[in-house]
Image (cartoon, rainbow, N blue to C red):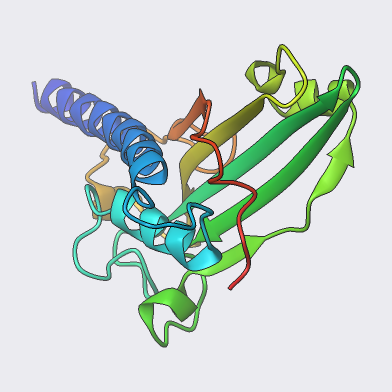
Length: 194
């Protein structure tokens, strides 16, 4: 009977974490689309995306628990893959990556590991390898893939997250990953380093 109760508890916690990462992706998506509505210059900056990433993970983490020393033994990552079709086999591509996994929190924005890479040119095959839904129908079309997930810090995490029997996988291909592809509002991307 005790093992059955532990099994039920583990499954509840497993699906709760899956729901939280999904809702984080939807929160980030909503903020990306709305954050610059009242500004003249709609282009998102690295600081905008860092704030969006931080706010989108507050549904699991409280206060600054997503930062070092990571009391839950996990941290949060969000990647924003932007593409714009130039022609049938040529795309502009930019990756903006954000994480709470840095070991030296000084201030909120410095504690967020963040990087908006330079715009690259990629082929259709390379874009399909990132995600098939990023393929655009006509020249000038834009797509944005938002990918959110939890990653494990070394050490025992089961008791911190409330798992007794299950050993869920964390990381880029783990159990707690959610991806969402949208068409961003015009002018939001590419992300600007500031």
